[in-house]
Amino acid sequence: EVFNHRARRIWANWEKSKELEDVDALAIPYGKNHEEPMTIKTSSIHLWLFGWELTESVVVLLRKKLVFFSVNKKIAIIKTIKPDGIEIETIEKKKDALEESVETLFATIESEMGNKKIGIIKKDKHEGVLIDHWNKQISKRSLEEVDISSFIQESMTIKDDEALANIRNAAKFTVKVQEVMIDRIELIIDEEKKIKHNDLSEKIFTITDNAKEMKRIEKAINVDPAWLDFAYSPIIQSGGVYDLRPQALSNEDVLSDDLIVCSVGCKYKHFNCNISRTLIIDPTASQEKNYKLLHECYNVAIKNIKIGTPLNS
Image (cartoon, one colour):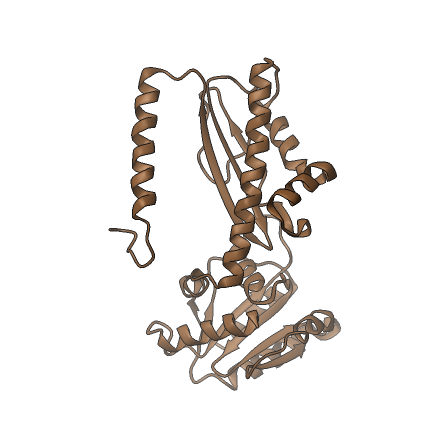
């Protein structure tokens, strides 16, 4: 049901899109699994549509059907989907005849195309033998790649009921983890203990391995713990050295009792939530004034966030 609803949304948005009106194929090739964030949108669309990251596979949306190219094991996963009026064609990726398999895939794609334009998520960088063969066929057939990164992002922007429930559960877990983190920071400061930022981050990060702690959290927020995880290692910074980028890391400096910035991001069923807090220990008059002003701005923003209100207003 989720797949049918979300896939139809892509086709409906595609039908209305002026930028993609002369594009007859939206291709999402996925190369080898990579630890670095090189394939963020590809990973997101796979999880959004299928609930799995089907690496070393290709998903192609044509005007009237979806084509899935992969090994039989992953094709079996796709065949568990019960499409409601949506045609799904599968093509086996044969490891001992990969080039011929990719040619078969492209023959299927081109049979449904009225021109030489094919949509692709250009910002994602893929690697692997499959991608090498894919790029070779794109060049061989003189296909023009059109970036669909923004289109895919917009199609996933409006959250359905299941996505909203997952986001709420991610938020509940994130709040609980942050409570644990702040409690430990306060205890460290009260007892004047010495601990490095990265060591404290690691202690918080391993909370999911603590059966007793997870049982307590599970009881408090009433969710399936199997789907709870961290989106990234908690970021803890103090002592005047701060990196506010999302990809920042906790350094090896010892936690100091001045101004502490801490961020934690958790996820539930692949939906993420992030919370950042600034803890000011013995604030100066200037810090108190700035904090109160910021808090007032925050309250005004929260008050005016209403459904249907443009963000720039």
